[in-house]
Image (cartoon, rainbow, N blue to C red; front, side, top):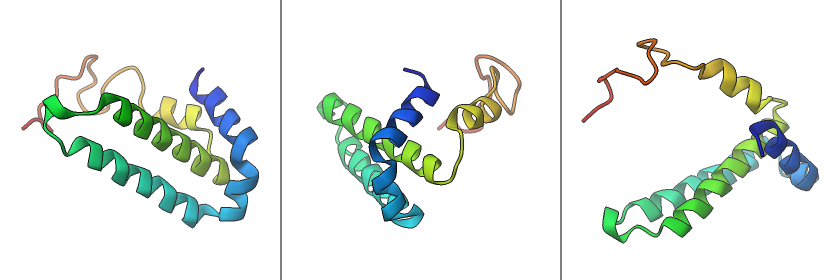
Length: 102
């Protein structure tokens, strides 16, 4: 399933509830899911629960799609424009930037 298909699925399943909840409360749900992912990631790398992490990432993706639906943003277009096939800073693929490295 591609980005557009997933966003459409979230609209079909949840838009009626998301619309009632509104943008701000939907954004709060997204933030709550980010907190749940953060809680899973705080463990040592050897102790990470990958299944729980996958579920939280899927939830985050779903809430981002729901928020985009409320804002009438096509995520597929947004992602394609923001992230072309090369790094936005160095213009290379793969990226050779070292700015964000430890």
